[in-house]
Length: 73
Image 1: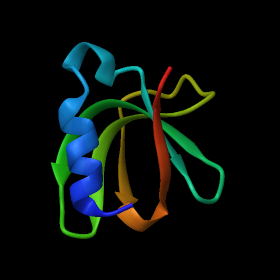
Image 2 (image 1 turned 45 degrees about the vertical axis):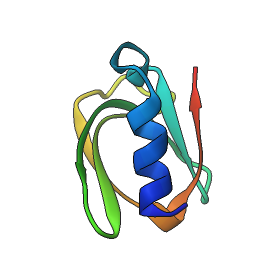
Image 3 (image 1 turned 90 degrees about the horizontal axis):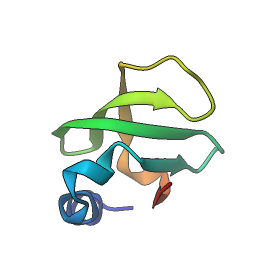
């Protein structure tokens, strides 16, 4: 996924639904987003948790090219 693609998708999701948004990565991991902190040139910085865990409020630096798809649970 390209930076602009990720920005466009996340910009269109209402803030109330952002906490249900999940980013799936190429190697099989998923991150449930709580807040988008920054859009950098090569990566996205989000606060959230790994899908399937209760460890919340962690920061993730996600390279755009590793994002396979996004979904709203």
